[in-house]
Length: 351
Ligand SMILES: [Zn+2]
Image 1 (tube, helix red, strand yellow):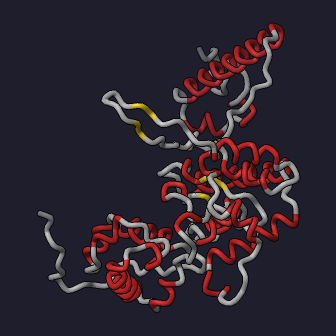
Image 2 (cartoon, rainbow, N blue to C red):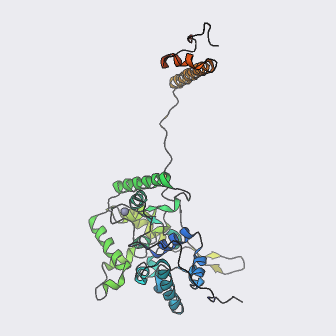
Image 3 (cartoon, rainbow, N blue to C red):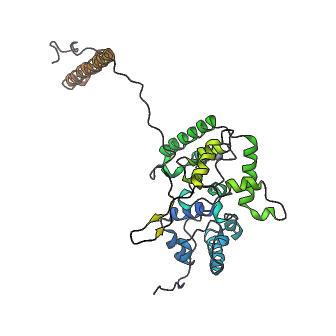
């Protein structure tokens, strides 16, 4: 029998009262909170006397994504989190999105971010956040920089400082290359912006007709996250070369055959992601070809360098045997000259 959760300790405010950022998604902020305190989400909720059942649920849509029986627990969660980090509950509520569940990316895919935004934030010492609109399936570009988003699931877990900066810089370069190859047309961009605004905050559109119904049917709950490169496919779909994206849409919409089971009956098909690994830097291509003369020249250069190092080693070995005044009388050119040169005060050769 499952043990019923019951609060029995006095809750305490958090040691690191990390404030939500503007446009930040709820999951992004909660992740920053748990990472800073080095706890799991369930541990954090227990500490704040929030129903721990909520820790395993998708909270991106707030009450809208929960069973009506859990609405009061969600309200309590908002109040306690706001109290724990000393902000207004409205600031917590503002991180939820108002769209339908089908318009959100699946949880593990909510790592598409603007590399340029993250690069600038990292350089300014600000937190790296995931914006609310970036977790939507229809979102594929940063409206501030106009760049396609980058998949940050491949970011090294221990990357810090300059290593992280370099990773973000390369991701930004790849985004720019993608934009050079696939130019979205202005009308498609405008449609995308309007629909994203609508999906993020449905309440603001009360009394207004939903924008671009045909566009919404095609993109609001699209399945491009099954593609090897989701962002490139969405960029294609918003460009004048959308026929490739159309082909993918037809393929992914095709019904898979049911799997027959040994004891009879069939199992409904489950479509998995084609490939999750994206945004990985390509291997550097070498332009070197087998030139035997270049190889001989390289070998000669290495041999010369080795001889020079041997000569220097002999000079330093000799200097250790002489008193300091004798060394002080030497010119730098003498010390770094040939090992066969005679050192002042010494009649013989240094060997
Ligand atoms: Zn950006």
